[in-house]
Length: 270
Picture 1 (cartoon, rainbow, N blue to C red):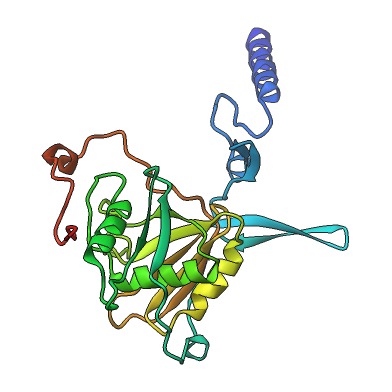
Picture 2 (picture 1 turned 180 degrees about the horizontal axis):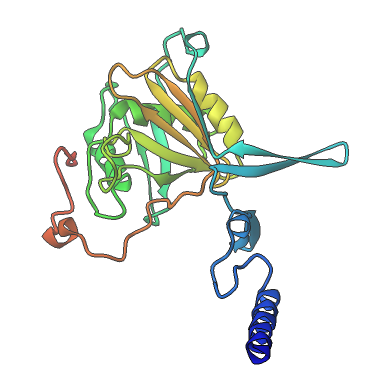
């Protein structure tokens, strides 16, 4: 009996020693992080800048300084709402110059065009050049972009002194069908040395209805689109990052087919 008691005591001592040696936040014998540790935000290095990661509740930390005091709060990564009818433009828009200087960041290509002919009608050759820059980066597909979107692009260009506009993303064939990018009626843009807040505010002033306008502070661009018929105007802020339509390393069927175009794509005319 005494020997059994000693053996039992030895087993208990060994078990307690193993448990006390386990790292904090881990269960004895388990390598997985505890739920509390897994929920903490991690700080990562992206492009030489420290950035807080988004937690599993869909929020991110935003900090500001006021009078030397730093204040931080958690905000939703995505915040959106229908635009109030009272904020929509009541007056008709004036016709823009038609001038556009566009550089497609994801393609490394650019063009300068005027979307109008001398008689004021659309210049199909100019629209075709823009369509080509708006093409899907992943598949190479080209679609005829809604010309009213190009008119808004020209108005933005006129307002900001004809500066070169950077196209972050245009038509995206490899996109969900609910996206206006898939329907060739959306663009993500920015202008060097122009704040995205100024761009966003001006884009809002162009909306007489049926437009979507979003601001992406983390990735530094604005989104402008025309909604599907009957959809109300929409506004949003998105603090998440953005892939900018980077090319996939996987081959796609459309790349192999090698047409690189899907109808209705515009073809330049003489």
